[in-house]
Amino acid sequence: MAFKNRDQDKYQVEHTVKKAEPANTQDTFEALSKLPLYMVDWVEKNNHDIVTVWDESGKIIYISSSIEDLLGYQTSDLRGTYWYEKISAEDVSYIREQLENASDSFQKINVNILNNNGKYIWSECKVAKLTDNATNTKYYISTLKDITDKKEAEEMMIRSEKMSVAGQLAAGIAHEIRNPLTSLKGFLQLLQAGVKGKEEYYQIMVEEIEKIETITSELLFISKPLTDNRKMESIKDMIHDVTVLLGPQAKLKGIDIRVDGADKAQINCDRSQIKQVLINLLKNAIEAMESPGFITFYVKDSEEVVKISISDEGPGIPEEIIHKLGEPFFTTKQTGTGLGIMITRQILASHQARLEISQNEKGGSTFHMIFHK
Image 1 (cartoon, rainbow, N blue to C red):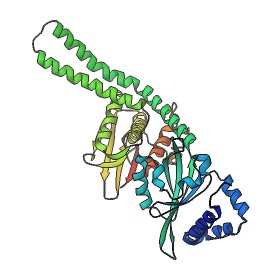
Image 2: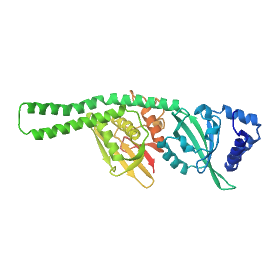
Image 3: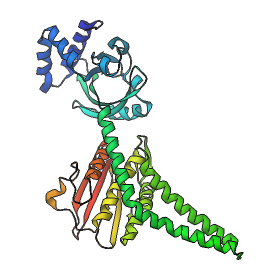
Image 4: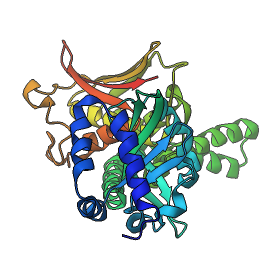
């Protein structure tokens, strides 16, 4: 093991963590501290996860040698630096918020970390805050694992589902675009014939073109990869964008989409990801309804949570299979993939939100997205 001051590092992390770790895992550290040094070396050499310990200021006081395999750094390169120096700027503020709420139980965070070649690597970080009871000093201990392959597989799955949605919406969107195109064609023929009232016709034509532009913009959204740029977003605006896209599909089945209570509610989120969630759930609601009726968005904004609910008037989901929704390839639809709800749950989980499903008393189902403030 090419470890500078390795014995000192080993003593420092064992001494720090052993005193700070809660009693229920203290036996583990005592057992580790009694192992021969070559065994500790073997564990460290063959452990693919990176283990780090840093103090309350963020300065790294220990990092395992597995950093060399994952990110290409030597341990001596990072000891004494700060954890946020190699994290993407977009992630730092988000991670700081999570660390403020960290406890002695591990908390999971996905982060982008800069490797020695200047490339960002998707990593899963599990972090816990520990307190040295003797000095009341706080430390953070974390493990890092490369999840690049997992993220790529998830993104491929999301792209596949998005393309499937685009194909299924084609008929409704074509119908919705054909109407303004017919109007444009008629007005152009009138102008060509030299009729009066050109200014009025021009205004109507501009409005029809804007309708087409709005619909095509939302359709193009589906083809774009999901981002991860989080800020406060208006729920009303996101619902509007989604209903523009799926409204034509609902109209073909005689379904009206209503919105209740979304005027001022906001959530801290990535707009593209939450719109994908809304698309998945609204599309499911439309497909569930076999006859004309209503789909209603209910938005409730309280001190602790923001709840967005989508309620349909379909046949409902049997209680015995509600818990299975979200399992890969489990679906109640003949042409479904079962990936929509699974992707929805993953996106919500990354926003520290959750999905709940309930049966309506008068038939149909309601999907609740619950975001904690």
